Amino acid sequence: MHKHRIQSIVRKKYRVQTTDSNHMYVVAENHLDRDIYAERLAEKWVPDLTYIRTGKAGCT
Image (cartoon, rainbow, N blue to C red; front, side, top):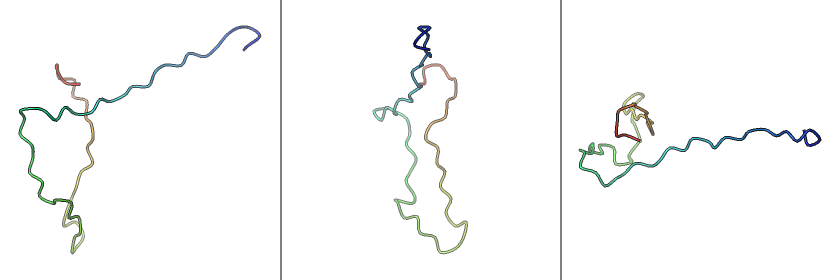
């Protein structure tokens, strides 16, 4: 590749921006308060949703 002066194209990876915490939206109540101990199976369910692209205008 060096001999023929060709090289690969390296594209910048997409980076998700962090959430703007200074907003007027309602924030859900924290019922668990980091107490994740459960006495039986399926007593507590916790989702792991970090980012969902919705395509709605004005959202990043």
